[in-house]
Length: 260
Image 1 (tube, rainbow, N blue to C red):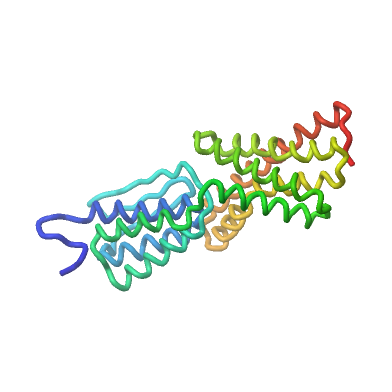
Image 2: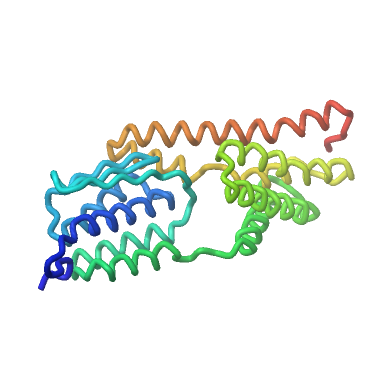
């Protein structure tokens, strides 16, 4: 018996819903359009839905099964979690080889969505360590490690808090960049050397590196609309970060603060 069929019940709407949920989870975790479409098509073929059409945009996706039903998903929040991307991608490959009941697919998809979700405290730790390491790569001295760590952790904390409250990404980046500069200004005021290394370490936590990489991959795959949208998003994010970092630094220097 086909695992996606149940007696007296048409499973197509539910199958499409789960397929759309899988695509939405991939997009929200930073996957490129080609990967999302491939994963959704694999799942559709696994459940004998050969006529499924998939359209994926950076902020929405559409799944249609002929005249039977259409499912639309709006992606409002995006982050980076490659563990989720890997888990769902592998799930689609496993299911394409050995189809399972739709209810089991839904359960496993939910498990994949929660793959490697670190605690907020762990994210703060990683951000602080990354900022401290970058400060040394930028020519900082060992004395810069502590303020750089504080800058990275504080920046990540503010960004997480703002995004959880629903603040727009550009505004969250702007405010987070302002906060990232403060430890560098404090270090410069106390006469510590290389405050610029501290500043760079803090704001590097915010840089949209994966977003730019994904945009390039979308462009190579021919998904030009998605590539252009992601590039624009990266430019807007970079502009917000630059503005947020420049404002407190300009005010500090205008008020006569020293910068070693």
